[in-house]
Image 1 (cartoon, one colour):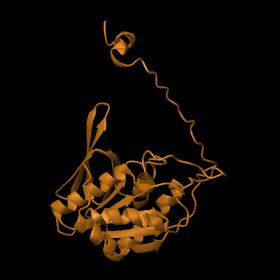
Image 2 (cartoon, one colour):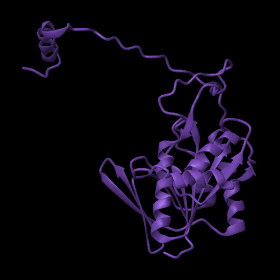
Image 3 (cartoon, helix red, strand yellow):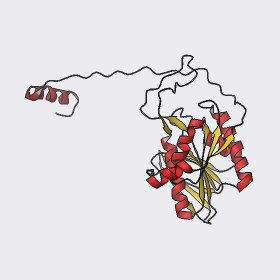
Image 4 (spheres, helix red, strand yellow):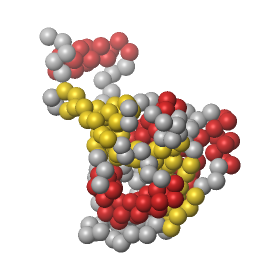
Length: 259
């Protein structure tokens, strides 16, 4: 692989896992007033995959996100673990629907590639942690007319070919994609590294490129968000001390653990 390997990773700012999600009064958006945000786990693995590939083959890696100005936090985190460049596609809203998002990202990629040459690999997460649409990466790959595979649990580069593996009901599927290509990475393909102190300091000084996101809305339209009902759990105290032993045995028998 030549020293000119170029990789782009597209990430998304999402509510931190485990956070309580509240909706705005009109049910049109997530109330972000008291939420913490992070990068989708699949995309954290995509960032790690890009860093590992550049470490192995040389080149540079760019991270891109579409979101509000607050999404700079996620871009700087990616820089702190090894990404070289960062691009924010700036929008005023918290999020756009998948078709419009894909169009905006495709337009940005075309602009970046016109300026600096084609990306050998464009990586997405398998799906975002909030909406789980499984759409944006596939739509971008189709719009760019490049070979695309989602659900990658293995990714290597061999003589200018991306070798992608993914799990299937029948075992393991293997794809060989001629570069340039688009790959959707699945959580578990690797273990993302933590930023070093040097990386954190460098990310604070890194210059982030900002591009105005421009794309027409797609045919998909969100009507409202619905919050699932909360599931309450009940704790039953079987007893205290030695007196609880018979109740524990009875419960184990009921569950089929004891004969």
